[in-house]
Length: 119
Image (cartoon, rainbow, N blue to C red; front, top):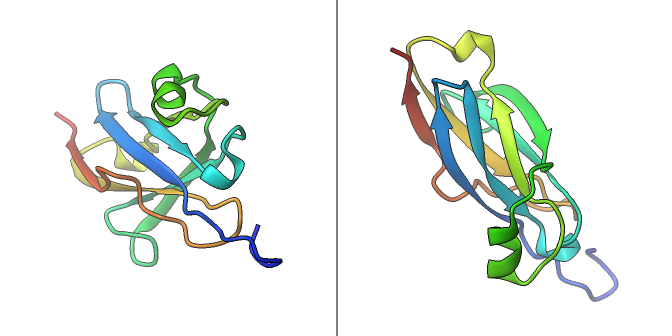
């Protein structure tokens, strides 16, 4: 949506938690420029984008009525990401980023990074 006088608004999101018992990273993200559409979230381990290891990506496919109500939007904005097996032991840190549908900056989600430890 950049160019032709429009401004690009950065995506918003929150890393709700990491659950080693279920190998799950979960939260929500949306892009105000395309608020009814799902977006992609990228995950890096043991360092931020650029220094950490890219662990994968998911599209927001989990219904989050609380997010829709809070922001006055529609769409599906929750995510669940399975921690890759390489990180399913020991202590690690996960960094989560909302991918901007307008091609701008991909901001780190609130409460990211999050550290977790497997027993």
